[in-house]
Image (tube, rainbow, N blue to C red; front, side, top):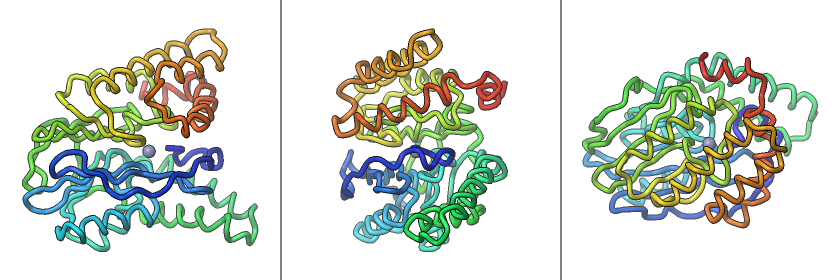
Length: 318
Ligand SMILES: [Zn+2]
């Protein structure tokens, strides 16, 4: 979530670390967390496969990635494959650490990381350098920013060695998955992973709570992508941030997303659209996340959904 761009905007929420939770036989969730004063980690989903563990998204902070390593150690299985949903640092940052521990692991992702390193992440790095210069020798403040810079500078260690260019069925570590790729939805290339054996769908940030995160998104194409996700025969969807969802919960999310876009395109006041999301998403948003949800909406309605058309066109590739 509050992704690379405006990294100073949301330093809000704290939630305690949780151990991995069993989602289905051979499928575990290591939930992402917000850590006070730092950026978040996305959810990690671990699939047991005949040849070892398949890890979907690797988090950003060492603490999160260490949980993945601890899980693998407890399972007595190596991590043999990593699948990244998209290039945001809260989903790929842990690649660097996991690759050190498991140098043989294959990393699957879209090719969008290459452009991101030259564009978005390069700009973000410059923002971080500025912030560090302004903060002087306040190490408490600057340490997390320096950690971000180190991740960005690890460039090739973040990037895939197996590029996913098209949707289809493929065996990863001996387990059969359906791999989907969406173009210019949350980012230029978003990967989702569906496990037919358990009917678990790992969606990455195509679904996030407590609100969608539009930093690098093409909202309209994202809306269309949600329609395609609904056609997948999943029983449980694990979002990029937030708790697992049933099909009914996803339908609620999708409707709320549609209505948010429609409201943002209307002349309604921003507060009306924010209230609409809070009402429409309703019970999907834990009460402890309501304040965060409102902050996100406050930022994204103006900053993304009502951004200048050139900005949206650039993200939509039109
Ligand atoms: Zn994220």
